[in-house]
Length: 509
Image 1: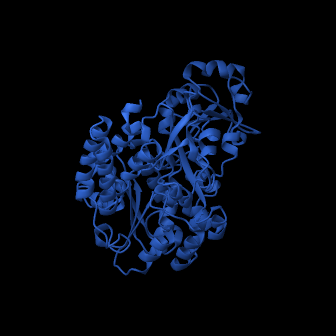
Image 2: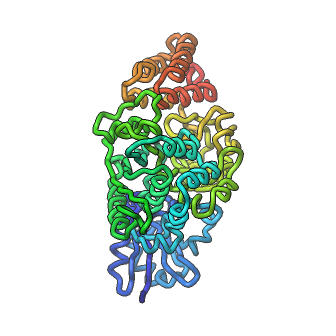
Image 3: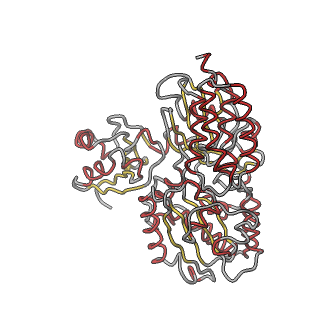
């Protein structure tokens, strides 16, 4: 390739701040080839333009169409350190000290360039899996210690083994891309930036359990992700990585993308299955579990994007290599998503065990406002509000449980000292009231009564009595709800009361 090659993200987060116009401006220059990639996940630097040089790709942050001509005149196309250049992107400290496994190719290759995918290690996991017996693949996965990254943290190997051992004329593999937690965006970024990793992970699952058909359930709020996935699926079919007798093997697998309709509850696996079958997204009572009676009553593997994205590396390098990463029973890496009142939001993939303080203060750079951190919510809108005194907690499943929190999908949302715990507790109940599928009473009615009770507490009406009533209500929701929606809504409410009790007494404010 002659001339200069520049890389401009086509990820939705970069496009939202003008990446398309920057790509157009660079593409209009003579002897310049523009490659659209995913985002490296350093969202405060977008649009981040990278220029290919003998030393590696040199990065130029926050580029706008108006500064392109000036940067080029000063030597951008030669990798000269002009403007706010961050130097060689792979050596940039914020990125270099991460341990990227699932996100290794995101931001590096063009999302649907299947040759580039293979050149950067793609298909190695599937190739190895295809020469193994299905049961061997399942045991390799079990040995890795991989747990579901969607929130529940259930051991993936056990789930796959259950599907493998359940007899049926047809089995399915389903990926839940209904990423609805506030402050999370990793599923979307991976789907937009490296869709073949997701496809490869699902193919390994299909071989392991004997599935012939799969679905990616993508939320309709992610149109770019859905479009990229569909293009990648078409390319995969054209190159023999989907369809009949994949790469000459005995594995045949068809894959489809289905769009959701905006219901948060469809992030729950049985609600997603209901929606895939053409019905209203509503939780199913368990048992039976989807691994035995899932989509259309057949055994079904249901995992989210990040879970499937970890599978190719596990099969390529072996389960033991993945299990060597992390801490305690939390093995491998976790993709954290920094958001909220934080200076440097984005994707941080590291081994389990990094402290919350390192994420917020080191990677995140503290708050945008410069004010002290007062609270951090880990695990989405149903996660606990942790006070600043808990910032040293290691980020793994068990340690977070010990401080009354949960990992969830890896979302980390930061607030400064203007955080109002009473208002956020009310928001948790209100969110549940709006998003509940209505199947069970504790969730449907409990959340409505929760909003009313918190309103009375905020208003100072029989405060002590209503705090006791709220605690009873939370216990009922936790123990009586059919799924995590109602069962976990009390977590942010009770953590807010436990750590920020003064916010619930307006007499002190």
